[in-house]
Amino acid sequence: LALALFSKSSHEARKRLERLELFTMLAELALLIAIWRNSGSVIGRPLREGQLGRVFRLGVLGAGIGAPLALQAPALLRGRSPSRLTATLSAILTLIGGFLLRYVFVMAGPLSAEDPEATFELTRHKDKPSESD
Image (cartoon, rainbow, N blue to C red; front, side, top):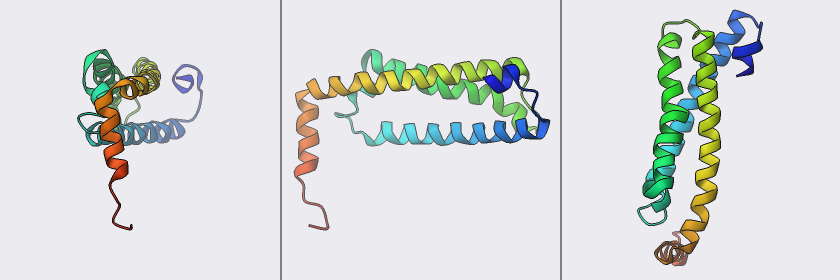
C-alpha cells in the first residue's frame, strides 16, 4: 500500500516487488486451500459452515486473495505495472483479507473446542499409532 501511494522507486524495483506479491498471493491461496481441504469435515467445520465459513470463502479467499489477483494479474502477465489505483485497491483488499484470516482462525478455535464431535475426531487421530511406533 505504501509503495502504491507514496513510492518514487524505480520502475524495475516496483516490477520485481509486484511479481513477488503475485507469487506470494498464489502460494498463500494454495496453502489456504490445502488447510481447508485437509482439515477434515469435522475439525474443519468452522471453515466450511456458518458465518465463519462465509467469511473465510468470501472475505479471505475471495476479497483478500482472489480479487487482488484478478486486479493485478492481467497487467503483470503483459509485463506492465498495474495502475496506482489498481495497486492501492489490491493492497487494501489484501490487508482486509489478512485481518479476516486471523479473525476466522481465532474464532474457529473455540468453536472446534466446544464441538464434542471435533474433540473426538482429534483424539482419535492422536490415539492412532504412527508407522514409526
